[in-house]
Image 1 (spheres, rainbow, N blue to C red):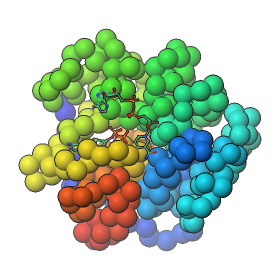
Image 2: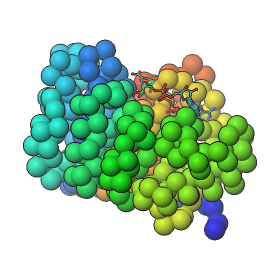
Image 3: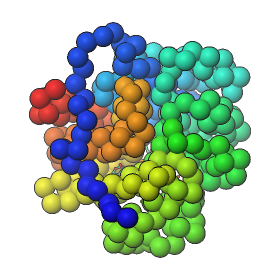
Image 4: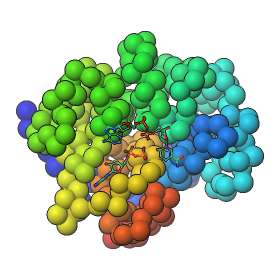
Length: 284
Ligand SMILES: NC(=O)C1=CN([C@@H]2O[C@H](COP(=O)(O)OP(=O)(O)OC[C@H]3O[C@@H](n4cnc5c(N)ncnc54)[C@H](O)[C@@H]3O)[C@@H](O)[C@H]2O)[C@@H](O)CC1
Ligand SMILES: Nc1ncnc2c1ncn2[C@@H]1O[C@H](COP(=O)(O)OP(=O)(O)O)[C@@H](O)[C@H]1O
């Protein structure tokens, strides 16, 4: 099966034409507890910058003041438990969900991921959500075609240990692509395997690669939280109505483009604020 490349020419039109904020979707990003809110805040900022009409951070009550002291355009909703999340999801305008960045690995986090998956909404599952899914067969079975899984190599090995055996070390990109395709087919979700070469595979078998090499080399992305920002970019594009695989591919290109725009010295929180310049270069 052939593998395609993610390039500038393969991007959808990301401009905004008319309409009001609800025409661009409402993303919900779940935060971890006190002292662990930074990752979700970066994801939420990325979702807003990439053009979601509204972004809300779902915070455990104990973390509300910490988050409120740090965000302005992003909204906050207290989500104490799975019941509260279920109540919030009664609002069908929440059309893109993100769970994982510093969410934690406790029972509350697992319950939130369960509710999110059973809602059937488009969602991004990253970081701790992936570890929880790897531990719980029922969560793995609840994955669906609206899910985008964004593992790094370690998380991929937890989720798909048998498939991961082929991609140890510096495996050729064709091997990595084949493994990602198998993971997508098995899980029924879109799988984005991160790295300097990032692979996006659709459960139907279509597979796409972005190579951050040559004039797209972005080694400064090897920094804590860069993946949390990628999760937020995908979530924001889902909110805007892109299909899961399209959102994953466009976010991958934008993520590297932001890193290239900033250059050396980049830290993760710089990435979302590079989007306006990247969008200007795209003549949006
Ligand atoms: N500012 C923040 O609040 C940040 C919070 N973070 C959170 O910290 C928690 C732990 O995330 P981690 O990913 O560090 O921890 P994990 O323990 O889940 O995964 C890291 C482990 O996987 C191994 N590994 C194998 N291949 C890897 C690869 N290609 N890339 C990275 N690791 C690989 C590493 O050696 C390491 O042992 C998550 O909840 C995450 O969201 C991080 O995202 C960093 C930034
Ligand atoms: N050397 C590199 N070149 C290009 N991209 C990289 C490089 N190292 C990491 N990245 C990208 O940065 C992000 C790191 O994500 P991740 O490993 O989940 O980190 P974190 O958990 O700290 O957010 C991924 O999108 C990955 O593709």
